[in-house]
Every structure is written in C-alpha cells, then in structure tokens.
Image (cartoon, rainbow, N blue to C red):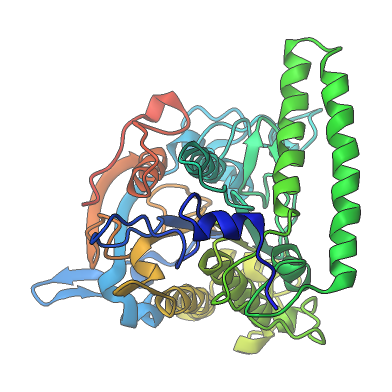
Length: 460
C-alpha cells in the first residue's frame, strides 16, 4: 500500500507538484506538457590528448575523435566548444596560475579566484585550495527551489545532488560544489549510502519504507532540529560577519531537513538496484562504482528528487586511480605506479595509455546519456529536457594548462542549444559558458563568477 502524503494530496488536487515526470508537467487545458529543465555537471582532471579528443567538421558533418568515439550514438546531441579557457585561473592568480592547475577544482563551478591555495603557493595557509564563493550548481538549485515555492509547489528535496567517484572530499583538490566562501559541500562517494540518502523512508513503486531506515531518518532529523535551534540562538549574539557564517551552516541544516522529510514519490518511480554485497572500495570496482552513481543520479532526477547534480570523476590529481580493467598494470614512468596522474604526465607510446583511459571515461558519458534517453517524458525523453556539461579541469595533464579546455555539452531537443557540431571560440572565459548553460535551464544571468569575465556565449 502506498502512503498518500500531504504533498501527494496537493499534487492530486492540482495545488502543488513534486517535480516528477508525471506530476510536474506544467500544462494548461489542451496545452503540451512542459517538463522541468535539469542540469548535470561532470568534471574530471588531468587533461586529454587534443588531437584525439576534438572532432573534425566537414561537408558530411562532424566526425568524432577517437576519445569521443563511444558517443557516436549521441553525436547529434553533442556540442564541442573549442577555445574555452579557465581565465580566472590563468590570469592574475595569486596561487600559482596556469602551471599549478591540478588544484583548481574549487574554481571550476565558482569561476572565481580561490580563497586559499595549495601548500607550495600559500605559505602558512591551510593548504586546501578552498573556493571563495558559491558554485553555479548551488545557485541554480536554489533558484529552481525558489521558483517552485513561489508557484506554490514543493521544492526539490535535494537542490543539488553532489556525488564523487574517489577523490579527496572537502578540499579544492576534489570538491566541485560550494555554498559560499570556504564552504565546501560534501559529495557522496558510496553508492550504498547514496541510495539510502535518496530513497530511505520514501514510498516507491508500490512498496513501503523500511521501518529501521525510517527510525534512522527520524533520529537524524531530531539531531538536526537541535543543531538548527542552537545555531539560531548563537547567531543572535554575533556580529554581521559571524552571523553570515552561521547562516551558511543553518541553510545547510535546513536543506538536509528537507531531504529527510520522507516525502512520497510517484508509483512509476523505480530506484535502480545497488547490490548490497558489492564492495565499491577496491580499484577494480571503479567501473561498477561510476555506473552505480550514474544510475542513481538519473533515478534521482526521474523521481523528482533533484534537478541539479554534480559528479566528480576523481580529483585534480588522481594519484589513487588506476586502470587494471584496461590492462594498464605496468610500473609508472614518472611516478612509482601507473596511476592516472602518471599517465597524464607520460601518456605512453603514441599516447596510447592516455587515449585508452580517456576513451573509457567518454564511455561513461555515453552511459549517462543512454540512461537519460531511457526515461520517457511526453513524446520525448528526459534527455530532451536536460543539459550535461562534461568538462576536464585541464587541457594537458603534463603542461598543466587550463587553456582550450576539453569540454562537451550534451543537450536535448528542448534546451535551445544547437548541437551536433564543433564551435570555435577564441580565448573565451569558462565563466561565460557556465552562465550560458544557466540561461538554457531557465536561470537568467548576464555572467557568472569573476566580474572580469562577464557575459555569455551564443550556443543556439
């Protein structure tokens, strides 16, 4: 028996919606349903091999490079913007500039200078490469929820779903999502925990919640109630700057409370299976880890739990990512072991190891697009209402360059982006690309991040 929650009742009477494919379609009498726009940011580090990454354009259309070849089935949905630079990092950067960009994850979605640097370039500092401002995923998630509430609809339980596959969480080496100055958002790296966070206590596909998980959720919520009240009391005794810091933490607590409210999802929502016996910690299980996270992100969006997600595939250094499933097991060339960082610096004969590994990562983007395409929405699919930014934080892992970044934008039919092509830009700041994608999903802005690089790009 499915529980009829307060939100479900409101949705059934037309007074509200759950941002679900069958409940959130804004539709007037006789009108075509309008499904919610969504955005996914997928970021990895250590660069690419340019002449194997970029497509070629000819009279017959776009021909994908070897690295992007796993995306052939989705070629018509892809835009390759060449000439996008992370200028906020390469120009007037007090923490190292273009030559030290293994530590630039904190600038990827904030598009601002870091608040603190890495140890060699920030003597006496915390050495965590912390961001200095809110990231665009958080801004978009907040805007989506503000719009929903203004229209009398329920906000998404997860304004942003932050996920990572390995990497060091909580630092600028690996963290993509930030709520403000030095305020890192922890990204979940365990598919079992991610599944529990998303679906524990919620009604899905005609089943009831696990009583043990419901009890755990209530315990967590009571702790959060106490923490939130304590923060509110403390903020009244502090000055303006300290109150702002308290407010950031209080907002985070309230966001978690919304996630724990146990709201129901539609009976059509079926979470993916995450085998309880699977141990995702060994490096040999990395492909299963990435697949499970992609499946959970897709399910969370299909079930209306979020409209914004970030996925970090490793971090900016990748000293702990190896590729035994690709038979790359030899001793390292520059480093003792042949990890992703070693491959970036020494890509192998004819760049073979680097091309092989980057091609494998491209196959994971193909999986994500396959999953989005498998969810029906009206006469189309969820991909038609989604934009995916697939971005490497470096051009070259060896040269540490942040110029002409390897970027793929995947977008569906309703996103207003002209895909199936390679577009040439000249040293445009990645700030402008982020602002343009925010506009594509209905969050208007004239620019993002560092005001030196304001403006947008024409993607239509």
